[in-house]
Structure formats: structure tokens, C-alpha cells
Length: 125
Length: 185
Image (tube, rainbow over all chains, first blue to last red; front, side):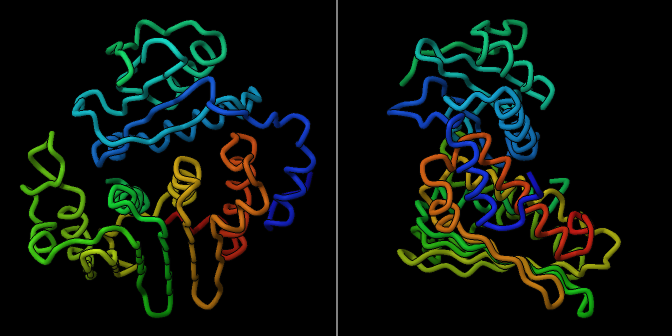
């Protein structure tokens, strides 16, 4: 497909991919929570998020919702990413874009927690 | 912050925390007049005159689990060191406008950076907010709004595949505007 330069082309792209884009019904299976206070932003949370989106797109995984939230007070561990797949919340700290890609592949897609990078586990509020 | 676009994201986060429903980001990049101007306008809860007094105080924050709030004070310092300014206009219950100006050719001016990622961030995490982005370079303008995207992509707006499409759309248009990818500078 040609380079997308207009909303019209974006609409066509969506039509084109309609079959593969399984529209989500109800809640997403996976929730990715990323903390975006000033500290998170300065530590690189934006690039981490972009890496997550990029990796999800490459793997054609649509059943994920990205939720931004304020700082948790874990400034030293920023950027913090939490994965919610129904059970416990798993928190990863000092996440780099490369780590984020591994987390997507290993945790989100294959369901294996990357335990080396986990900084906390918690129940949902 | 390494890039101005990260400061923009920080301010956009403030707007979101202030329960804004409509946010408008305007970027004016003028080579002839030698300035880079950014404006973030929201219809959030606004600030009382007392609060507005304190936003540039690094030892003031509205957050309950912190003692310092460095986002705006450092940006103000940076802008002023580069022959520019940061001003805030705010009315309680009406919304807030943040205006940032840098002398473009100033040697200490941080680069604008990856503004596209900042914008995608808002589209992705807050599709319910009506976000509009206008970028003017000399006399050429590019504009995009959440409403248009929502109309074109509907419920797929947040799917990674569509987000990548939106990214390409904005990047290509900025490249067209600047005749290359010099907009990050």
C-alpha cells in the first residue's frame, strides 16, 4: 500500500484490514498500564509505549488496551509498566524500549512473566 | 527534558488530569521571524488565581505523593534562557492555556523532538478526548483532529495497526510540510 497521507487513505487502510481487525467486544483481555507523570515522561515512558504499540502491531495482537495513569510514587523505578491479564497486576520497572518488546513477546503473547524485571506484584484496586 | 515534545506531553497530561474534554495543540514554527511557538489550550477545570501563582514554584505540586513539581518551572527556565517565555492563562471552571516560545536559532534551545509520538500518545490513551493538532511551518499548515480519525476508524482507533497508520499519516504530512524530517530539530 502507498504511503498514507490523508484521512481518506487511512479509511481505506482500515477497510483493507477489516477482516484481520477483530473488533473487541467488551473489555480487552490484556491491559497495559503505563505511568505518565513528569518523572515517567522524563525517564522515557513515551518511547517505551511506542515500542509496545510497534511490537503489538508487528505481532498483529489487537486484544490489548493501553491505559495511562499518573505516577505511583515509584519514581526511582520509572518508566513503570504494569500488565493486567486478569489475575495479579505485574509491575516492571526501569523499562527500556528493548525490554518492552520482550515483555510484549514473552508476557503478553506467551503468558510467561519476565521475572527478572518484575519489581512488584499487586492486586487490582 | 531532552526534547520540547516531552514537555508538551507533560503539559498535555496536566490537561488530562484537569478533566479536559477538548485539547488543542498549536505549533507555529517561523524561520523568518526566528521563533518556535507552542500553545496548549484545554477546557479542563482551570486554576484559581492562588494556584496559578504557584505553578512555577518548584516546591509546589498538586500531587499528594510528591514534594516537588518540576515540569513547568524547568520549562520556564529553559525557555527564558533561550530568549523566550512560558505564560499561563487560566480561569477556574473554564480551562487553561499554556503558551511557550523559544528563539529558534538559540544555541541552547532543546530540539522539538519526536512530536508525533507525543500526539499518538494522546490519541491512543485518550481516544475519548477531542484533541486537535495544528502545525504551521512558515506559511504552510497541517491539521488533524481526533474527530476525523474517529470518523474514519471508528472503534478500531486504538488498535495498534491503525495507530501505526495514524503515525505514518502525521509523519508523512510533517515531512511534506518541511520538505524532509527537519521538524524534529
